[in-house]
Length: 81
Image (cartoon, rainbow, N blue to C red):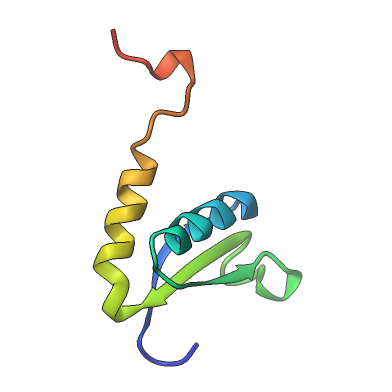
């Protein structure tokens, strides 16, 4: 990875990383996805998919990911009464 990019998200579920990448793109933030789930990466980072953004968009991306992670999922067990 060239200089100036920072990791802002990682997951062991590729579909989740794709959803976050799409959400970032919808908000004008360019993200690069690196899938380290192949066998060549299993020694250092087993099963991780990582999202990187340019450092100038880091804070915006982190804020968006934080807000995204705090959205209700629709699971009734998570609804506070």
